[in-house]
Length: 335
Image (cartoon, rainbow, N blue to C red; front, side):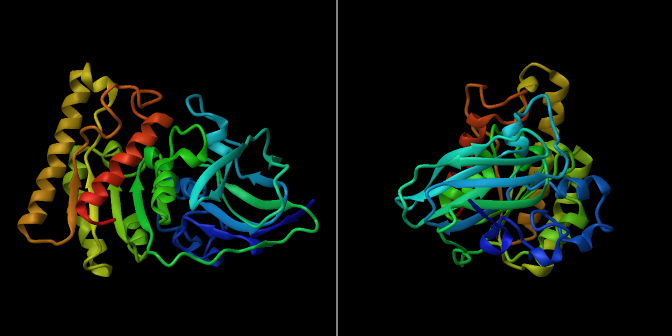
């Protein structure tokens, strides 16, 4: 077995060149460290949405990855928090192969073996709620490994909350940004910051640096009605300064399961969604072009089985949400 580092694979799911970041698997450039809140900076070192692609003819694929924190949560599997997911391009679509299950801070796993020796393209998704300090791919000594070409399509930029970050997918490949990326063959940039997706000017200014296919804003679960009123139009104005015509798509807050019974939570969610509509209507009246708003209805199904805890999605919820969003993106003709 021989191991290869970052010089041998293509890093995807990031807006910024690796040379601008503290780690190639971070989500924000080092220059933003003193501009954003500490909570945002710490979360930006989680590798949510980051993946690598490589081509090899090896008969097995092994992975070494060194975690930043070895983080754990009660309601999300370690495989999703800090594991890695391997996919292979088969019949022009990405097919799941296996998961590197983490056991400690430094891990080494052979994910697949006994492959026929032929050239294949692989994609490895990195942890959703932990960072990666070092990553290496292991192949046979006599096999080759090479970078595939960079994609020519513009990426989709997702900005949101813990749900956008991937909570609580059972493995990295099942976060909705990663599902959508595979289904559309478009790179998706994940700016999901758990508990901290609030349409803040500092973050919006950073994501506006990306020449995106469109921006998808899913922040309401972390916001108050007052924050929605204050920040929605300001977000559009910041993006429009650098991207005058790039579509911006908002989505309402989904109805948390408790809100079907808890009158206070139901009222809060309704008020936020009504405020988003009010701000959206203001912009439409001002004839701001290429802005859209998606209703929450049917986003994760109607059987109330799409979450882990009534808020964060399980794998069923993420799959349904991905299909729901793709359908709506196509209806709006942004995809």
